[in-house]
Amino acid sequence: MDEKYMKLALELAVKGKGKVSPNPMVGAVIVKEKKIIGQGFHEAYGEAHAEVNAFKNAVEDVTGATLYVNLEPCSHYGKTPPCVDKIIEKKISKVVIGSLDPNPLVAGRGVKKLMEAGIEVKLSVLEDQCKKLNEVFMKYIVEKQPFVIMKSAMSLDGKIAAPSGESKWITGEEARNSVHKLRDEVSAIMVGVNTVIKDNPELTCRLEGGKNPIRIIIDSTLRIPMESKIIKGADITPTIIAAAEGADKDKISLLESKGVKVIITKAKNHSVDLKDLMNKLGELKIDSILLEGGAALNFSALEEGIVDKVQIYIAPKLIGGEESKTPVGGRGIELLKDAFRVEKLTACFIEEDILLEGYVMNVS
Image 1 (cartoon, rainbow, N blue to C red):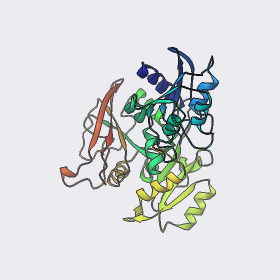
Image 2: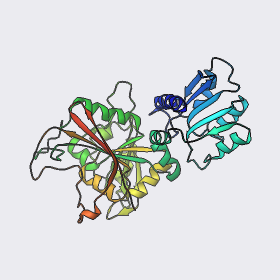
Image 3: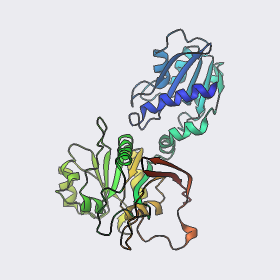
């Protein structure tokens, strides 16, 4: 029975996807005498937490009821008061929690406070599902760095473009729509300047009612054309260009006059230091990044250990061509034992295309 109500809490929590970052997605269900009497979820950053909304929506007195919540209730003052205090005040008799909060400001303190108040606490119900739902938060709150998803689309023979360079479209419409859903959910999208020069993309979300992610361009020496769509739209869609130390100051001033935020990182091999950049982006409360390449940037990101998850869309097409590019370029690895390992791999069909998804084993 506990799993049944926790599944409902998770279904409620996911309604906040793309709206609550850098906060976690949380759902809450109040049950009394085997009947659901209240439910709610965290709807937007800075607004009421799931537990508070569940109490507000309760249809009868919650005294003596059981509260189901997928993440440990907060015990500190942030944008809102501690949820633990509200739970105690409402005389809840039992709290069932999916996963503990890794936030150092919470980290078991909420559970301790509930137990000290005489409330029964049950932990780790559907824990793996609860942690997966908030994998972005789980990394960001501990490491203060964004969760990076490397996405690419390729043919069955591993090509991302024809020998001519043509790449639109390898996958079908439904697969492309799923990528735009992801753009709507993440904080930022990141590409290399070569992608901007070659394709002149807008890097926006084309879903009706969707939000545009912050656009991040890796451009070590500021080669981006001022007439590109990225620059022309920087006054509407937040845009960051990451350059390495020593970048031209006049170009920086020109870009900033167009509404672009320029971040200068340490130089590594005459390029942007991606690890330094992740720290700086974390300070800006960017908790998640969709990395859309190209191939050279994908390899650099893997090599620097900043990629957490990969999403590879595979179309039922064969392209061929020795010069046709693959999702990961760069210099590559020399020995197979040094290959980047992907674990917890899953596969599903999106119409005729296949989506492979897994987590990069970063050992650095």
